[in-house]
Image (cartoon, rainbow, N blue to C red; front, side, top):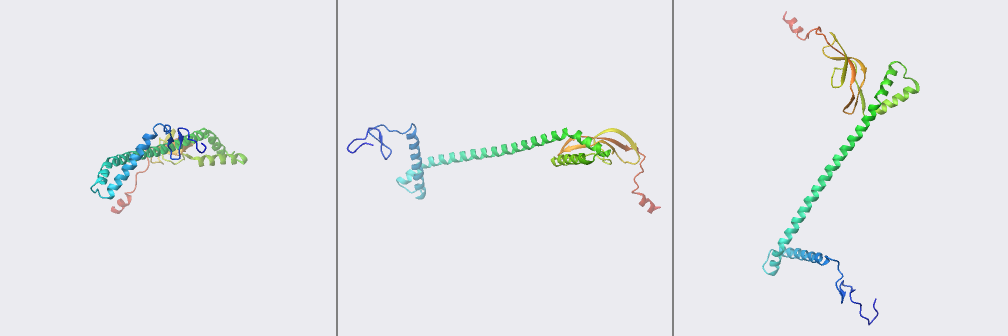
Amino acid sequence: MPTSGQDAPAGTAQPDGATDGGETAAPEGAHTIAGEARAAEFAAAASAAGLSEGGGAGQAGTDGAAADPELERVRSELAERTADLQRVSAEFTNFRRRTEREKESTVAAAKASVAGELLTVLDDVERAASHGDLTGPFKLVADRLTETLQRAGLTPFGAEGDAFDPSVHEAVAHETSSEVSGPTVTTVMRRGYRFGDRVLRAAMVGVTDSDGSAPADTTSQPADAGTS
């Protein structure tokens, strides 16, 4: 700080932001930005004054009319920026939803892959149960494994008496009988499994079809009996 009676060095900043005897220390472009800001402020104030006076005659009315183009430009730019923001927001929302769907699909595929690798273990467990060997601690472990896979989304299918469906059944044996009216699963050699909506493995089955000698439909017999 200069002592009393001494002049401040040239270019020393003063409280009002100016310099004393030196060049202005404002950054490059500051004058332009400040000028535009003052011009926009003046235009907005003049426009507001013109609108409040109802477009009256005189210098104030002339200034308000002159400020209208600037105000319209600002409004147009605001509308454009708002539209840009809305578009970016919509794009981000779609991206987030797509990412979530892809994540869920990836997780489901990973679970299905692990479950598919364990199907042979479940076959061994089922064979042991059918032979009466699934007892003691082995049965406890097998039950927990089965329950865990089912909670994850694995479900078995394929049972005797089911209607034959070539999309989920693999027929390895075929015979005919008068006891069925259509292709029917009569033997299950290997159970099929689904994981969610995905078929991990078709059921290996034996199919029995009608031999054509099944008794005809007798729904019309009561009517015939009534007419005789």
